[in-house]
Image 1 (cartoon, one colour):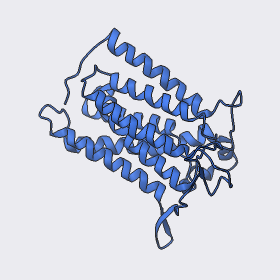
Image 2 (cartoon, rainbow, N blue to C red):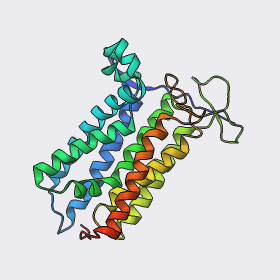
Image 3 (spheres, rainbow, N blue to C red):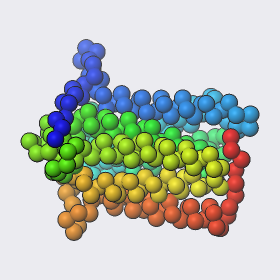
Image 4 (spheres, helix red, strand yellow):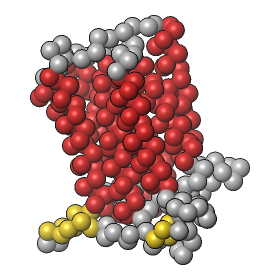
Length: 266
């Protein structure tokens, strides 16, 4: 058994302003994605400028933040919002939904595509390999906050979390950081080197993330206000991930066997 390091969620304070590690993790993830995406602009045939890449990251990040918060309220905590609408802006209390953030980021990518005259699928194919950077840092932020821990277990790497009682639990945040962050990042970048057809990168991202999230949900406890939706094991995370798995499979099949349009690697 491992004891959680009990890191203070507040990284530092500036007078009355408290800067949380959770927010800093988002900044680190977005910054890393921006840096790596800009490196691609050095390719002679790359269609967008460095300034346009900065716009893409900015629009996507804004969509991610807004969508993530709205998604959490709608999917996970709507009844509390009805009772107290001010929770929508109390982001320091936590509460972000990846699925909502993804929809918000899609809106930002669509806006960027309209601005530069690019296909939506080309934008999502380009950005998909960098999304795991934000997923990794976001899950590390969850770990620092001591939230979203898993079910009780007697495995050697079980952890006791300060908000989870004295019971050793699955460190499900670290599982997700490794699967949705590290492994997904490696697989997508290896796949990118194969110069896949248009939309295939986006499809593979949806499929793999959906599968990884679905699997981890079996050992991650659901949000207390929702609990299990059915069968004693079905969670909202599973329900929201299943359409991603189906959509990812459909996009991959269509990319390879219906309209195999190969886009030259930048």
